[in-house]
Amino acid sequence: MMNQHCVSWDDVAEEISASGVAKRVIPGSHASLVMVRVPAGTEAGRHSHSHEQFVQVVSGSGTLETEQGSHAFGPGSVFHFPSDTWHAARFDGDTILIETNLAI
Image (cartoon, rainbow, N blue to C red; front, side, top):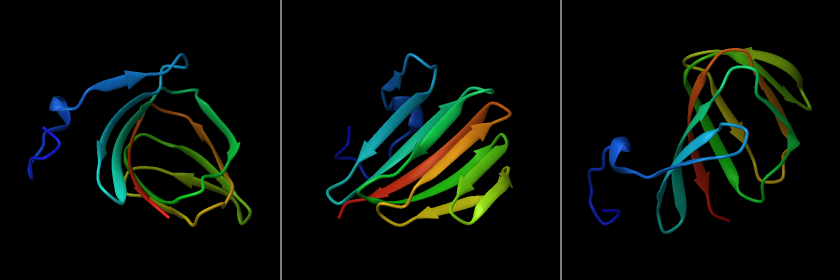
């Protein structure tokens, strides 16, 4: 399935963590695309990644915290995190995100 040029998110296996966060991952050779479903009330503590990341908010709302301060987000918001840049988030509503993770 991952060798196809056109894939439906519904055809990608979903993994659900103990906290209820669900992810569907489409891997590439130097990047991955990830759909993330985050339940309302979830908090993602301060963390960073060794890879560069872009995140698009499809639906939902919350607050993003970075070294630049706190910022409310909602549908249409896009985040960019260079590698090793810390960030944290609180999700006020059920939220769907699309992450693009770039390999270093």
